[in-house]
Image: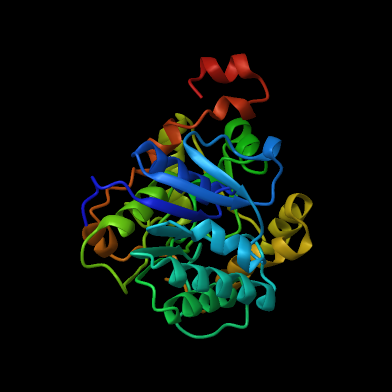
Length: 312
């Protein structure tokens, strides 16, 4: 499939961080992008070249209209973890994709998924969505990323990193993790939409290297030009912090991944796949320290002038 042929892409989730990165990259490369959102016009992300339609994933007609005329789709589910609600969303997407006759749908599961059922909504609602999309008969590619670097450029990480040199995250320090950025996720989605011979496949995408917490801190230290130490944050503490922004239900869903990893029963779940996915999709994820240097960390500095003098 040629990258030079413009696609008409329905992007589900473009109002969120991951989906917006995908929509932005697709629009930059000349593809026609349309998305669905419940947000009022003044609260939508600034996505040049992206068309927004007002609607809800729970409304089958809204979803059908989003997919009408689309040739491709990129889907990431919202931070909703009630199984029946997710089932309804996935069924609407599957039906609309089938009716539109999509050439390909790329589903970002937003997490790795353990091989066996866990009973955790964080994994099982995403597994459910994948199964329903696969059963639709629409040509499907599934991406399962580990954890996003962009999670660390946030109000609960940035100040401690910049001012105190502390990188706190709810993963055990010895958990091997192939951290990836939203931008590299978007590159992976674009590749999965356009590459030949990938339909029906599932890719455990990830960053260039698999890093433990302490190795991640060293990469951040290189990027920030200062010493950084890793601190493993209790998943329950992380969940309480996230609940203040997203609400309890969404926070519990997000934190489920970290509660699971803290138990240590599947320590390699978030690790890299020895470059398999990158090779097939022709990806070259940016090194962590390079990603770090590109972020405007000075916004978190307690003393901007002092931090600027130190090169942060």
